[in-house]
Length: 449
Image 1 (cartoon, rainbow, N blue to C red):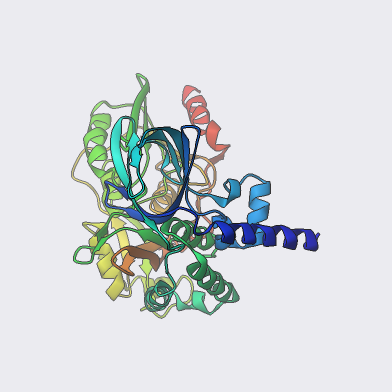
Image 2: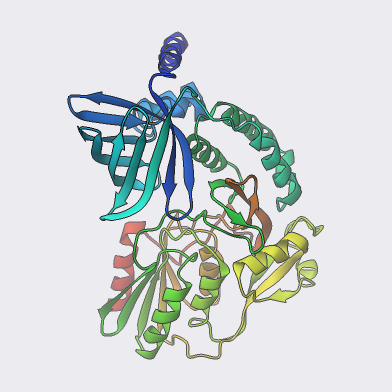
């Protein structure tokens, strides 16, 4: 069996080497949100049809031959390890087709290709959201090895607990990162490879992004591309019941500030809050939500950094931390970078709040900012939590500039609930457990009874 695998991988490597310099276009895929991905594309044309592809065997370079082969066998890796594919028809120099890019999905492509030019537009729902520009090149890879030392230095200086960097797990992870940064041929391989490897670590919120960072206020454009439209979905299920899906706590503050007062004023008897697949976000939207739900001062929990000498939950020590209700995520991030930690609270609001019965839907992708909210609502008996156990990904992360193009997001503070539970790796168990897809149905059944 080992001999067969070795021969197969050797064949793949030889094939890849033979094709490295065959009609390569050094290209940039630029999205209107400020993200630019550098890649190397190959163009093949036949019978008025064209195919543009990113480098083959990206999965082998990211994860090694054995795991890549298994991934392809079970359909978890793209065919031939090609991450980006653009296919369509050619008419003269004009190209018309479809694009598949990870995370972003399927887009329409309109472009032009001559001996010297490769240009195109990326279109979603008839709206141009990005562009592609390429020049013919003899290069067959980009160089990323110089970035890793800076990433490791930032990690060492800022991670919430340096004990994480003294484990066998971290040492193995470093070796994998070194291999990735040496072999990755384009931004897409580096981005996907880094974040997929990080997802296997025992701590969350360790990610690499392509984007820009304004270090003055720490805002960045590393958010995943969202669906066009609102970040919330409101629906009146019946005269007594309202349903509100919050897609994220990153960019939903404005939408929540508009819809929540209306929900409160209509005096619904029941409100279903759906945070399934909500990966979290910032403080602003979370506090906007709490402003219409909590009726008194509530202790949320403690954020502790590597500047505090602690071991596990130490209530007497943690109670010495200052109480905060930060104005913004940026403000809170700056504070945590320089201080020992803080006690986070939801203060009693001055406005009217929801007075009916509250139901919160969760699943395994409900993470980060969502988790302290779900925990507090459950423990204070302010809501019934329905669905699946949450992700258990609750650390405070902050972005750091690696280069003009790359940003490292890493956890700078651990979190303990007000009563001493560390949610990282554990999550929040619902009051009523059910499959994610059945959670809303279950909530409606409870309400109807």
